[in-house]
Image (tube, rainbow, N blue to C red; front, side, top):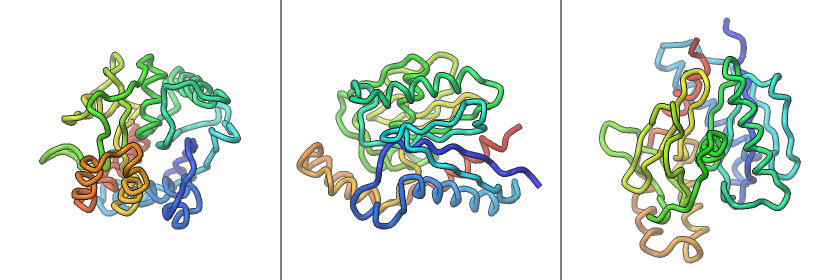
Length: 242
């Protein structure tokens, strides 16, 4: 039997609204996302169901971190915050430095990240995120024969870091994912979202940062099938690869 996959979940935000009432914490949301991916792996028959040992760390308010030497894998969550603007208590800068330290230990630590976390990985590689001139990208992207994922962002990486594998693009965002074997898998999208979470996001931001056209475009597509669980399984396969 394989040893458990020990994952340090770096919580980059807090839940709000109905989503907060459904999940204990943002860590709980991501843990259930990974558990669904583990079930998908078991169904495929390629691996036995991986045993997950997930520990959550609040890197925003408590700035909790493990020693890099004690981490086998880390997962950076999404966040409502900008990944590139100055932060009052330097938690974002500290997070970037922590990811840099993990990247330097290339033989052991494996990094997973989505949306905000993905942009933090980009910063650690030396690529500063920026506002997307195309505005918000919401709901689902990619065409036939490509994964469909919920998207909720208006910041992007303007280019790929050197020596990484490119994982996709969309009409609104050229840099959708970064992969380095045995080291990093990260996506701009939100594979952990379901239609209910994505819909609440749209409702909460309507009239403030989302105009009616963008809002309605997202609502029209938010209930379409998406491949979040498949992506979760791919993240875990990344950890299982030898």
